Length: 212
Image 1 (cartoon, rainbow, N blue to C red):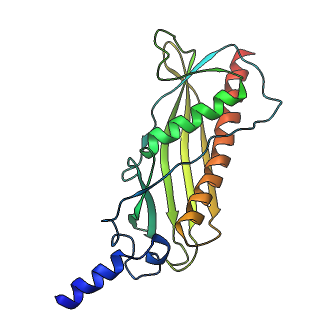
Image 2 (image 1 turned 30 degrees about the vertical axis):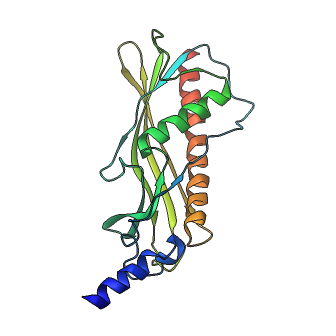
Image 3 (image 1 turned 90 degrees about the horizontal axis):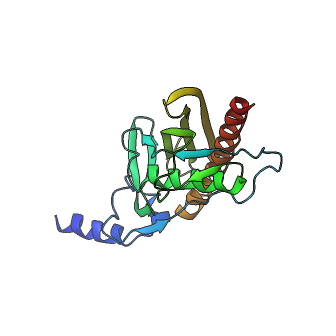
């Protein structure tokens, strides 16, 4: 028992990047304060996007089991979902995704994207998202850089009847350039940027098609 306690104390002092090299690394250092990480919205978009005099509301996304959390998900094995030790996103994943999509669509100036404080304004369209995957996958083993997998279902609703007008998908995988947490977060950001670009162009194209 004394040897075990000493080992756990030494493991608890390892930084996240070193903890990934251990046999069961992902749950051993959670006693330390968590570092907070955020992903970034798009700052540039294609110039060819049309200007549409319509209001869009982005619903809070739903998420697959285990992803409705601020903790950063990972799959050390295909059938196992775990989380990085001592690290989390600044918000739960669905709310973070909602904010990133809203900010990215707002950059286009193609639509009037309604925020949470837009009381009394009725949207013409609603964008509904379901997050199916949002994790780092250690498909080559925990000693190798993981593959970031982000996958979402998209649905555009017409108001006021909430008719389902179109469905789509945003999906991207990006291999991290290292096994440390910083490299993993960079890969999350790169994958999310590509998914955001897909969501932005798909949403505006679908609305433009219906507006003639």
